[in-house]
Length: 254
Image (cartoon, rainbow, N blue to C red; front, top):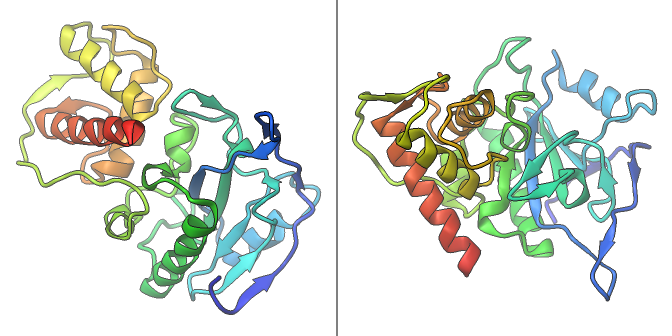
């Protein structure tokens, strides 16, 4: 366990549902958030207030301080309405980590080096303790596209992937050739929807570029192609989608 973790218990938790004949807990995902409030102190206060009805298992301050709020074997209330790879209600099976950052409404900014270094320590401990699969390190926007956008496009997903905390795409040629956008119907859109579903987004088979497709694609771009977040498909975005979908498929067969 990382050193110098401060315990600040939140009342906002309950027991995780058990599954299987042995009544084991299912903890297979880590969901990363930004706090989206002006200060870390305000976020910590809210996460520990019974009136808020929200919580997370950990909070990582910009200076690297780590606060333990909920026992990771318990169910914290951080993901809300959410799904990934057919699982609903991701609070049941995930560990939530709030990374202090004002977010898009209060002056979104890069995450400090000390903060990310300490986050990597925490993730290493949790991955080892709960045997979290590499592909199950996700953002709040991944499991709740259209509703959430954190931890956002400035979050260093590539660096985390270097430590096997999430997937990352191979290098690709920057090709902005347009393929599809919301409202279109085509075989390209059908392939897009299929790939987004393979990755984990809740997209039904269709050749229509729906609002759900737009939301999922925008969330994908925030995570895996942060230099372009417009909810449109071009050749470069398609290449990254194909790569992540292939990696995700391989992970499912391991």
